[in-house]
Length: 392
Image 1: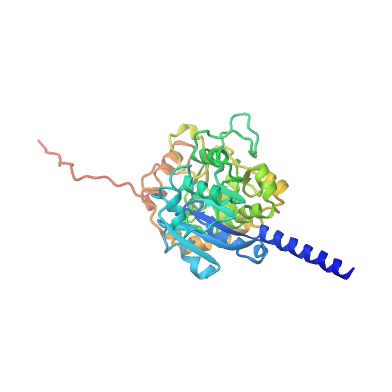
Image 2 (image 1 turned 90 degrees about the vertical axis):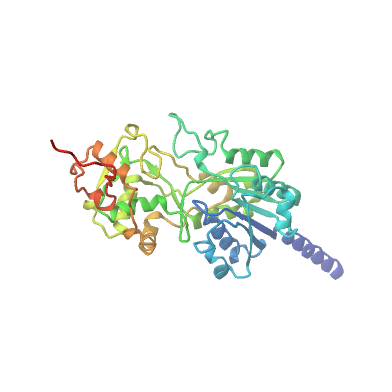
């Protein structure tokens, strides 16, 4: 009896060990050179190297596009923040030719989990990453796509769901289709506007601060009640990591919107930014205009509603939702804005469209002679070719 019990315990132990080995895998993060998704590789590596994933991820490698700026975040923090926990390999992703070149760059290693936050289409390095994952027998292939390829029409209800039509010719859609075609266990996430503590693209929120701190009007299209989804990169990373927790459900569903469910209107963002900068609400000058009256506008978001919600990820992957909120994050964001020299940077050549919109809409400001814009973006007239009038 004791021998049978011992044998049963041994079988259970071996089964548990086999299950542990099955679930414990190596992770590869393919990271682009920067931009809107530039911080995601860092935040994902941080998440996967935390205690919550220590039993599921045995090693982490970042394959980093070598055209990144190593002196800027998040790339300058790889060594100091990760040490030996994360291996970083540099590669020229723009010129990488094929599968064999990629495998050589990775030193012949194979990976159970691949997170591609670099490829924009199934060519060059993008195709090589897919082909390598297929050869490795990768358990889950996670692609960071973009909600920007959605094509809503007049009948689309918001937030947009994963079945919203997409631009068929978009590079990200072509990448999805290639991954599916070769049989990868694809999970494709579609994020929207991202900000974060180690970002290297600040265009969206800086647009508001650039005008608020200079006491300038904010030209916002339509009535400004359109909703926007601005998501902290740490929340995006936590959602991407869910594929390791729920691989079967992730692969079965395949496509997921990726963003916060804490939405704000364009007007809300203006007032929240003002509060973070210590500016009274009554001093905020919102200049609403009809975007159809102008060929181009300086506003960083779409003129209409264009946002997603993470309901599918919550239901299928058990994601708890965003822990961060823009309202709570704006104070530290503004501190970073000041540290980057935002209030004193040159705005030369950046306010011409603002001036045009405000003069042609309903502004009550002066006619432009010595206007508020001229202080930061003066009109320069070249008089070198002018000849003096000849009397008589």
